[in-house]
Amino acid sequence: MLDVDRYEARLKRKPRVHARDRTRYRTIWISDIHLGTRGCNADLLIDFLDHVDSDTLYLVGDIIDGWRLKKKFFWPDGHNDIIWRILKRARRGTRIVYIPGNHDEMFRQFTGLNFGGVEIRRSAIHETADGRRLLVLHGDEFDTVMLAHRWLAVIGDAAYVTLMRVNWLVNKIRNWLDLPYWSLSKMAKHKVKNAVEFIGRYEETVAKAAESRGVDGVVCGHIHTAEHRVIKGIEYYNDGDWVEGCTALVECDDGNMQILHWADEIKARQLREEQPAKLISVDGGMDQAA
Image 1 (cartoon, rainbow, N blue to C red):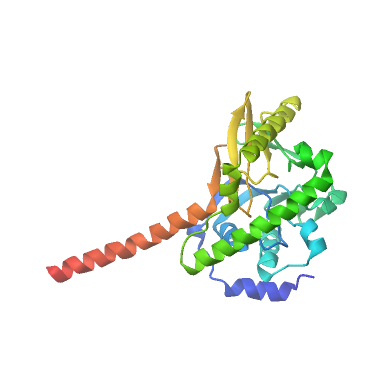
Image 2: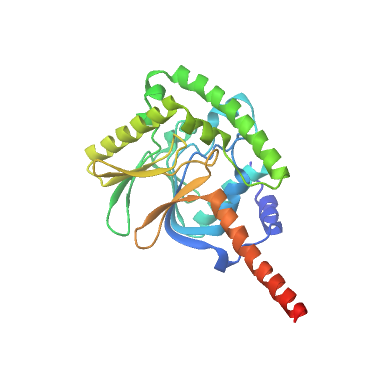
């Protein structure tokens, strides 16, 4: 159970991000966090949550990985920190919509209920600032492997977990070497022809389902591949994940939407922070030379 006093104190010990350094969006979509696994990039997600605000936050499934937790319990403080940050947003007035996926399907039984300011839905219709209607769902219902052969999906999940452990080790080493985050699994996925073909078929199937519901587009997760493309007039958005790509989908006040690759955002921020120091160093050197 979450110890409120303990985690309030824990959050206060962390350096606060100044309001001027936080970016506000109309809407944010994130999915496939997989809390309860070593593959979850909790530090990057915490950094993301500390640097962005929104009127609405959609949690588009697989937030908690019930499949892995059933086999082995793993829940470090960083995973509690993420839950706490989300609940804190709800208390401050952010609308939180949680759409469980296949890995956290145990929460689907609570569809229609509201817990601590978090709405639990099976799917949702989001209207953008420029008037487009977008269907929001996790997307596992369009995964043919999941539907036809759940046992095969579980076997595939076990292989995926092994790959993510290697990914975790690679990035531990990169972190020691002061190198930025890099996704081994993402690279492998784009190199394997069958994976590329599956992703293409999946995107087309989801877009077709959105068209049948009379909406302008769809936002989903599930396949851990952030994307925006137009398929036969339907806008397809996938917000990605926080295991491989560490991405989020955001909507600005004018309805413009974009995918944020958070590792790249951190790198850009670090370069901006280093630039003034370099200018001061150069100016100082010039003064001394004069």
